[in-house]
Image 1 (cartoon, rainbow, N blue to C red):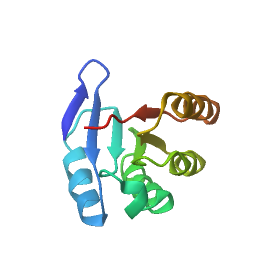
Image 2 (image 1 turned 90 degrees about the vertical axis):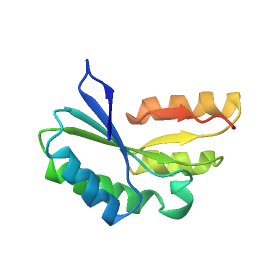
Image 3 (image 1 turned 45 degrees about the vertical axis):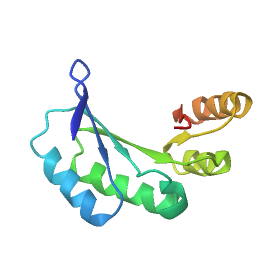
Image 4 (image 1 turned 90 degrees about the horizontal axis):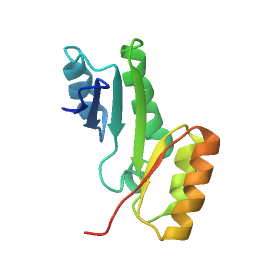
Length: 121
């Protein structure tokens, strides 16, 4: 787990299943970060689904009530899955065209979530 920004005391980690969640929560025990971003692996929306990933994020958040824990679900090139992520209180990462991305940004803001744009390699 690498610090995202030492000024804001934030950390990021990728969780893909219960075993990686255990490793991340163990690492967070000694982490001074106040804000934690848990990310799904690439295409996580396709393999884990928004609800399961939300449950993993909730488990981590329950273990660290003093931290702000957010989840970001990688939705690959499926903007519809980003909408599902928002409905489950998750941020999203999606690869899409400019117009769809602008609409997703508006929806994300309205729902209190965030969306980031993935770029094709």
